[in-house]
Image (tube, rainbow, N blue to C red; front, side, top):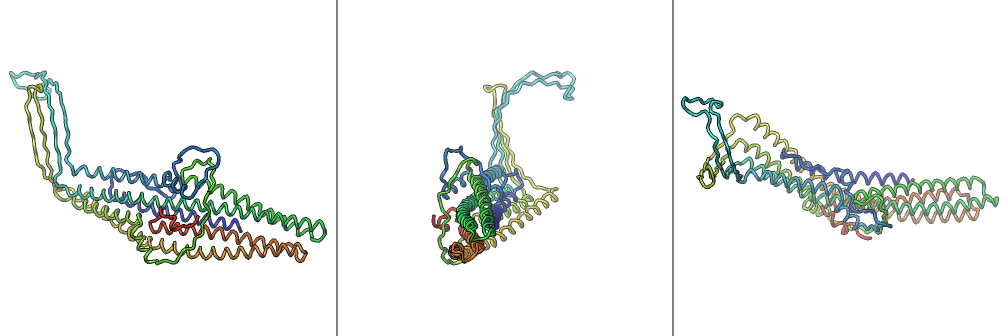
Length: 478
């Protein structure tokens, strides 16, 4: 029973982390889809939030680790946050690249030329004219200016890049909320493991007492060998559960260290305990409105849709004329002391004529990307509401399960005590003791699982509302 409950907790925790991280990845993908330029750094995936960049060296002794400290380390070293920051930096670089075509380009050149020309080699043969000219030299210092005065397509592309950069920044902020959920979940899972280990150790001690009692009764001739064998089987079964529980705790500690950037060899001791703070009934619609206002992943998709809209307009505007100017001014002569200034200026009007298929293809591609961005935005609006409602349902259900589990633990403990007393007084055999021990194990496991689900559900609500960094307000207790 203990292993079944432990497996349920672990699969539920993995599903939670996976869905949360994938929610971030979908928003990040939408940000870079609308501008087919140099690829941006990879968006964080589900696995990214389970990993980190290790920071620091192993310290001697045991490191005390509070939930606040674990989350702080995660916000600093978690791979999901680092990749999101790199993606935002890439989007910023893309914005700068798109700005340049709108600004004047000024170049300066300095040339020192030494020449000698062979006229016949150039195809020039004039009777009586020298065949070799030179050698001669000249110096040319020059500055040139190129500026697209009217280029609607480049302007729209720059506006799209601005929206993409804003979307990347919002996704980077949302990644911090996901780290709080991921690290908080990992921390609470280790707390649940440690509680389970202590519970199974207590059950092992109780089973040892029952075994000693059965052995003594059998040796005294007041109980059959079957009672002793049954007690030995129960004790060994609990010993196996204890081995599995300790192994699960150690593995989940490794997962916590991976998420927050601690060296895997570092010994840690969790200083906080799994809190239980009753959750008051609140206005669901008010929470949904709060989530729609504060969720950074939703805001990121709004920006991504705006970027796709601007990129479609840029593709359409590629058919419009572009007006530019080009000018240069320089000083040229045999030497700087024997030189003269020269200037050239030109205005250009560029109109695409025979590019219809390319322009039409770019427009259709941009429209398809816009349709995708708008569909993702509509889906995310619904998902935000679903996240809030799911978290509230989980909180309500888990809170009731905790209350029932507490009552079940009290009843199971009382039933075990009664069964042990009856067996000690020779009123019944130890079958009832074995059954009572199983009931205690089941009740304890249900309490651990329900308390874990309750606290993670409250962390999920904080993330659903876009307030993951304010997790203390929702988690409560110490």
